[in-house]
Length: 113
Image (cartoon, rainbow, N blue to C red):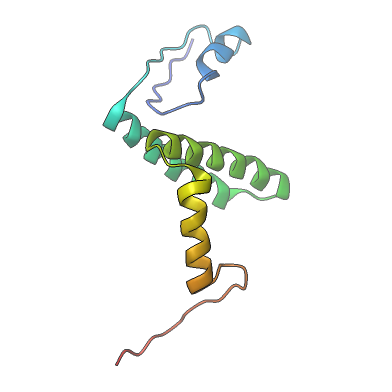
């Protein structure tokens, strides 16, 4: 028997699923709240971003983006931010003023006045 220390935020059903599906003999899990929860969410955000970057196929990228969006939704809920009311309005304003990232523009140099 091998025990692995993880200490990371996981999806709500993972702990039970590991035992119920016979993958693990036992799993230690506990909920976190407030600033501690936010810290784990931000850590998970970075983890999921790295997994999107490391994806090699369209299918892998799709799966990793789904995970990333799940974390973004959890962060949005934790901070009580409505998608339609706040984030999309801010996104639309930035797009109107500065554009998006669809054209692949890379800035290589700026000379300021």
